[in-house]
Image (cartoon, one colour):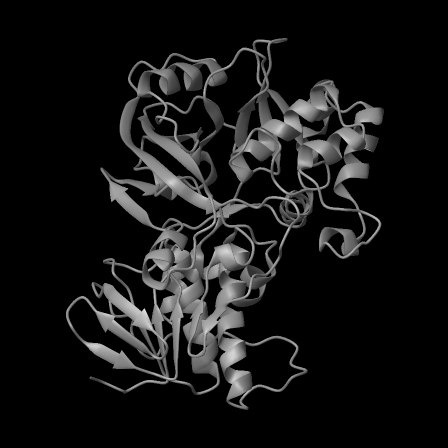
Length: 425
């Protein structure tokens, strides 16, 4: 039995690391136990034949407040996506471009010529995407949160622009049936409006690694946990650790196994990674397919156009993501390569499949009505943190970790009630 820390944190994903940093900032000692061989949880990157492959398609959104306030983007060597979309339609052999004229003025002619921005459709999109802040947070009594398909219909968002919005959100929300909470869908949309997504030079795992490097006490890797309870943890190696607080900051399914708290339903994703000798386009943003008769790919991007470090010199890296629905078989490789070639309008001869990532539980569902924050405490001395306790995002994971620390610090009298924001390093 050991008692050499105040708090034990199970899991070194973004939630667990953020919790440890917030506690450390106020002088509270914490041990972080991680079953894997590196930090990051679901945010991991592998180097395969010189290519950087994230485990599933991820982007770093600098519009998230926790990222903006606590992450050194310059040190990560980030490069930004183009603030727009390339669109495959049935009308023309060329990709059509729709970009934000404020951030990408060079694409104004192509955006105007796309024919997708009819004034009536833009007005409908504005009605849907720009509610009051109270409504976004679920606090407007005059507007009840509903699935996004219902709110888009009510706003009159139809036609080609609706198809673009639905297709773009399918790759972000990991659903194409419009079932996500309107409030959450609006939050996600606003975050992309406020900040252009980026990729770190060393891959997405560089984000949790940067945060973990600030810890005074290194994360204990290769330390799976067999049992947790109120104020104690037992590792699979047989060590019993007692503390004032145990924070289970694992993925939802592991948290269910350890604590009994039911995991919310999840949404899955399959990502195919291709090594290609020639970039199929020079566009540095996500491509979507809005044709009626299309294949399984919901989004694809030439990653090396955005961040050249994702591919070795002389080669390019293409990612193609598809939905992995509960109870369904993953998409076939041959269907994906056929569809992705059709999207770019090129031959895929010479493309090499480096890896496919089948992730049945990529993010928790966010149905209506939107619950921004769930109760974290299971019993005295035992709480659960993670994006499934907040919003399904990097922001939500980090906020949940900070919330876990805040509650403990308040009980210890180490945090005043009227704090502005708890620092994490």
